[in-house]
Length: 153
Image (cartoon, rainbow, N blue to C red; front, side):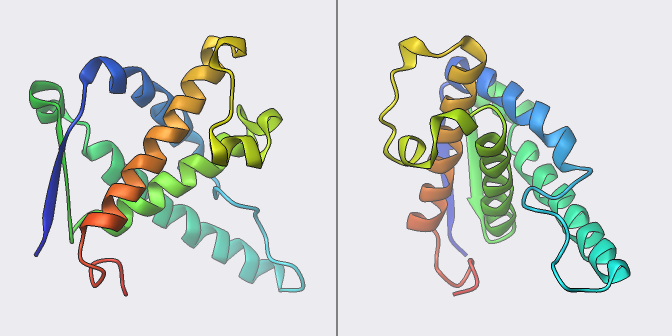
């Protein structure tokens, strides 16, 4: 079993966690992606959405669990086969929600290239963008450093 530990700067990460926590509340009640399925029974669509939200709750809990009391003492988060896939999905859900809300005016290309003038952004949008980048970095770390079998490969 592989495990990676990452030391993070508390002063940088703490404000980003506020963004994550704000979005986590909405992700506990509705799917990150488009809801409903075209051309299917309404009951099936409702059940499908309920299951997605249930899974998202577990994923969000796993992500927020990285940033508990121990994190604020040591500044370290750890990824392993127990939490890697959950963390990947939670990061993806939050990034999707950021894209459809605070970061929507920026456009996908600017978000993916990072070609954004931070000085022109409001504090809230700047934090959202930095959170978007932070979560992308966590995803990259997990994918690059953990055994592919952990990720279902």
